[in-house]
Amino acid sequence: MALAMEEGYKPLKRGWWESKEGLRFLEKRGKDPRFDKAIDEKLLKTAEKGNVVLDSWTMPWLFKNGFKIWLEASPEKRAERIAGRDRTDYVEALEALKKKESQTKKIYKEMYGFNLGDDLEPFNFILDTDTLSADEVFHVLCLTIESGIF
Image (tube, rainbow, N blue to C red; front, side, top):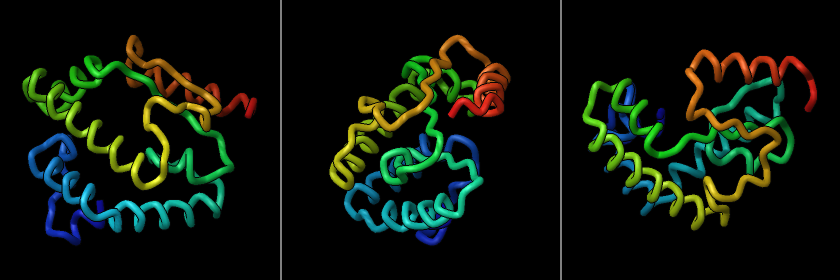
């Protein structure tokens, strides 16, 4: 987000990535990989320090250590959640989500060669969240991490 802000964007409100401004930034990222590369370099340095939790679509492939979790949800469920969170129309949320996901997958395929959402090989734990609330997801993840099975 800091790099988006440096470029004059205002990504601090919820749902920004699905907004028209967020999608414009995504298009810009597709033409200039320096944004993603800079973020990934910072995240790798943070990951190497250890004892951190990162929310990243690239780190599972770029950082070889750690316990990696994939939270799965159907596009429909994700759009429903976005629409509820941002108080927007479901159809608009689904359309924006599909555009964002398609662009993001293309960026990462071109930059790093992996298929986001299709190649789940680096993950230690995959959780289908379609039927779970946010609290339930958090509880399952806490139990998994606290168990030390990784």
